[in-house]
Image (cartoon, rainbow, N blue to C red; front, side, top):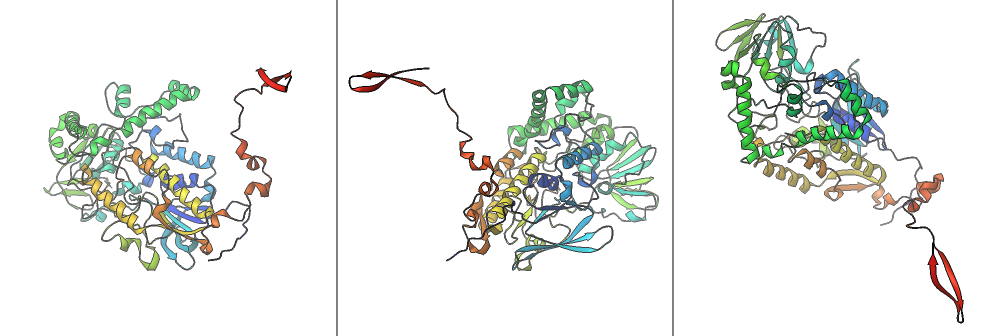
Length: 564
């Protein structure tokens, strides 16, 4: 087979890429792929990594930032959304990533063109409703799983004439102070919003249908030490912030101590482990102690399934809010909603000024728009019988498609930001391979997709995640499809280097040696001195040159000694 040698421009090669998402992952990808032509398309009107502007995070602020962009001036241990948003906006501005972003666009379709080896992606401009189309070499989604909220299916919900809110679509102008409110749901969102609103409202009816574990807060030893044994939150003082500014090693030690707390719970996820059994006892004891004023709530709230089967939510202040005088915990189900309030299944009607729903997300990994791969098969159709992936990022039959935080890439414990950074690095390696390696298309081998999916199934059978409980971690048939099969440290290590031998790659013009280019190096064309002599950069003398003395003898000159 013959091949041609084609000279390229000496500018850096550019791969057109469209990244659709509104998550922290898309921001990390933009930061990590500055060597490429990247277009980050977002449905929001500005930069923001939080899931639907989540206003009550439960992760320590110093652990909710990039490893390479530390902020020492966090005001609180658990920072609120405005402060976290400000951090990410400043990171975006510092790295000039905003130039890559197009806001106010919603993806409505992505279709692979096999002949052109391009993705054709259609977007709706939210301000006008106009449909526009982009063509790209690579299509990346960063929308995650908890991105499509839905109203819960409750009879008469939309007949309510007061204020109706969903936590995922919060009205920032709504003032709950002095109001009578109802909060429906005790999942992660409900657990976060109840303590935020409880001090403000006149009264709160909290409707709890299922059971859930409320653990001590992440890194709770830091909180309890500052709060004299109590849970909750605390403010950092100016003295310690200034000390961290002066002493970077002291701040690094603090961050590492927090991370150890975040990363240290993986053993709890293994059924029958000593750590798991101890955690079950400790969590039960802790919940009963904090709910002792309303023991009947503890009886109904503490689960009979193992901890971490569902997402373990620390919920700073949640249990304390449940026993507050202005909170009424309703453990019966909801019959219906009318114009003035909610009627429980026992017939009790409770009038309220506002209803806040915290349930209702589409967690099927089907996405909100069709993605057509090779042969016109959609990703949604592909996942109907069995959700499959390779390392949570790629899938066969969908060339040049990368799914950031796709199936089997989330976490049941550990630090998700670390995994997000690792995913961004991994995707960056693939993009660089496409851009500089003369690669036209890349997709995982079918057997590698099957093997990883089978490995996930085998792994989770040993863990608490496969226990019987209603969890968005699982598909309808009980398979764990949302979580990475291991710890966050394990994920970061596994994603550290792309195993290109696990991929099928097609080259441009069938030239397997296209990566070697045309015989020139870039430095030779630009005259870059360092680039022309890089092989001397490691050269160093182990000692000063020695002066050699010579002594003439009868047979000539003979080297006899040396002196410094």
